[in-house]
Image (cartoon, rainbow over all chains, first blue to last red; front, side):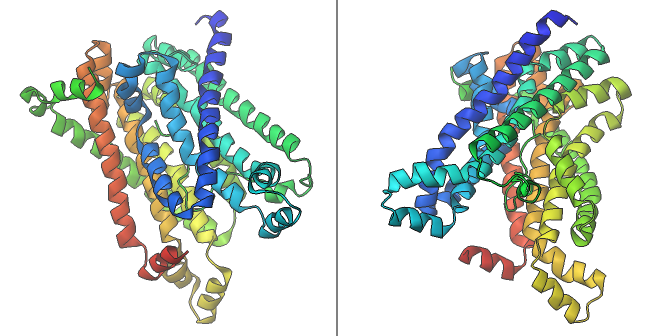
Amino acid sequence: MNWAQVPTLIWESAYLGIVPALLGLVISVPLGIACTRWKWLYAPVLSTTSVLYALPSLALFIVLIPYTGLTDTTVIIPLTLFSLCVLLPAVVDGFRSVPEPVRQAATAMGFGTTRRLVQVELPLAVPIVIGGLRVAVVSSISLASVGQLIGVSSLGYLIVDGYQRDFPEEIYVGGGLIIALALICDLLLVLLRRVLTPWRPRRARRQVEPLPIGVPVRPLPGGAA
Amino acid sequence: MSFFSFAWNWLKQPQQWHGSEGIPIRILEQLYFSAVALLIAALIAIPLGILIGHTGRGAVLVVNVANAWRAIPTLGLLVLLAIWLGFSVLAWLVPLVVLGIPPILVNVYEGVAGVDPELKDAARGMGMTPWQQVRKVEVPVAMPLVVLGLRTGAIFVVATATIAAYIGLGGLGRYIIDGLAVENYGEVAGGALFVVLLALAVQALFVGVRRVAVPAGLRQQEHSS
């Protein structure tokens, strides 16, 4: 194992984990707004994302090879599609969590639809949206390692190389770094949420921590290869 | 050439459909791995989830562990067990079971814990024993989430059974791993196509399961909400 390449591998894993989650967010916010406004849209869109989520990542990478080659894009597109399954419900739930009186107050203060959306509803939706983002980033980082099987480099390299050379220590390092990287990104998102929502009482944090887990009627995401 | 033409050219060859390495056998292998693993995971996770949901003990632990679970790279886990255990049944069974447990556990727990307290009071008021309360009220009401957990677990397991070919297992992943090794994209594409079809079939299956397992009264409520 060559320690000199480890920083590069960490960077590649972080890139392959964060970019899909951000792209997923860029798609989910307008789509989520549309689904909140036109309620009939939500059910079909949600079933589409959950069908996409069921597709194994390795198979999707392979489907894309003729079109995008053995590049980062081939890994980023499927991971982005997976992230929609978490992020879209998070955005919709986030908007739905805005209390109706708040919305009415904003309207009464003369906010137009767009301004109310950007200045009132979006900031209030932040905690739940970031909850979804946490799941998306953590699972993308972990799943990106499968891309190594088609030769897209990440910390998964240490796992594959360690297996081929029958060298468990290298696998421990690779797996450990993937878990550490995922948990650090998770922590950073928690901090980001605190910065973005300074009005939330810190002491009540423990009760209202918007953990994405176990939000009912939604598949528990992540982990699937 | 597109993905589908590669896949089609490969799968229309008659030799792909016969013998111990033919497509039907590979599909059966993949289904066998997945079904055994899912069954064992369900036998562990469903009673445990009901117990935790009913008593409320250990809930915090379950939710947090399941959250951190996502960070574990599946490929790393699989490869490590293969190195530790060699060509043992456990080398594929353990990672698949381990992957299948968290989604089932969390959803069953959420479902049982989320049963309306008034409903539980009513059950107790009618003189039901704790066992009757669980069996006749809590589990049926939790059924949508139980099925959801099983579906998510099944998706995880079927998907991971694909990359299990990397440690020398049969199943549809065989085509992908072998095809990649000899750079025969047609074989890889064919394997990926069947993996995708299988994943979609599993999802469709659970739509059917849900229809059978969820009590009729509950289904009506969902449509009206």
